[in-house]
Image (tube, rainbow, N blue to C red; front, side, top):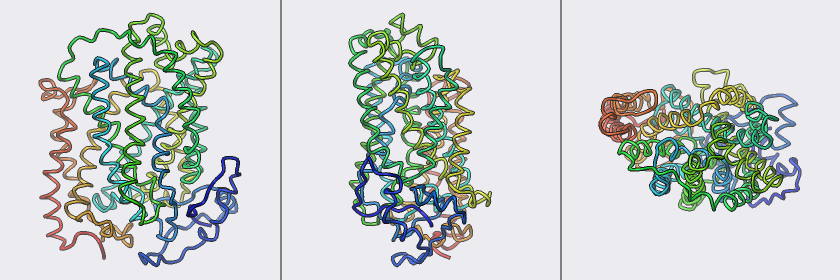
Length: 522
């Protein structure tokens, strides 16, 4: 028993059992030999338990942080990259986030729509490029990050990325819970609905890579149907937008940090969804799948959310619903008022569409928690599946209080993570493109867990800290606005990228000169 692999060209029928998903791959997964291509021993060791052995036979992915050897990178269904992102974002999450652009930032629908589409595609480019590295290395994204941040300094990035992805799970579960609670107001509380959504999501995160890809291959169908019905039902009312006046420069700059928090952060987890693909995977096609899988559904549905948000306070019944139960209650008012019980059915589908989103988040969080084994060795011995259960419990615990102030929570959360993502992703891309010349073989898999052979990470850490010296006075939020931001608007993300780039090159160059090596071998 070992990790989960995907048989080349294997076709999985929707009616097939879980055992069929794993059929034909058990012989490969029991191998712990040496890769003929990279000559690296597979360091993954599955828990020696009959329960976990049986779980593996039924399609549960057991592998944690360990790189995937070449012979086990056999997933040639490259369109999975598109479906896993597109399906998980064909849900309520971008609708809820989009409503913040008009309700929270006060932008007109026209301005919000233009900024949403442009910024989402722009800020998805780093993730689209970075995902192409994973098939060549077989490494999850946070393991690749060690070749920039080192084994121990990378813990900070792992923690923040874990909080980031978990935060998206919190946001998504709240959006879905508001819908479920609005089906029959007073019957199901938002708190209970959050728990229901996250338990269902945990099932996908628990099963792992293969089942998640299989689920997202089909889950978009009912979600898209429900969204089309929603658009058809609300369409003739969306023109009633609250007059927005002239938005300030602060609002537009705030949108930049907000959009960066949405999309740049994907660059810190992108590799998790392609590490089982072979080194021969078509890089350009993967990049296109990732770009459109993330940016296309997210931007379109975020525009829909902006339209709904802009109309909320122009329509009295929508405004009352929003005050009572957020965006989910508004959707309930739209659908139930006009469609009756069929509207309730559509509302349930919309609420449950978030399961694919949150399941993906639980999976990424569990993978990132495995990386924390660098400082908490026991975590490397804890199965990834157990970590997915723990991640679900934490998301539920955070989502319940956050649901009481949704707009403020989302705005603050996405802006702050955008700052750190801007700095950390800039350092990683500078390391890979400038110092390693875009060569994935420089990520020597033999040293992935060797703190002495890897870079110290002090260069990246110092660059991130230096950038925060500029971010803090330039950031703008409900709870704090820096002196620079008071005059210009939110420039935190811009400073994060520029300062970390300018700082990392000289500091890293000095480190390489001092150590006499890049950090590719012992």
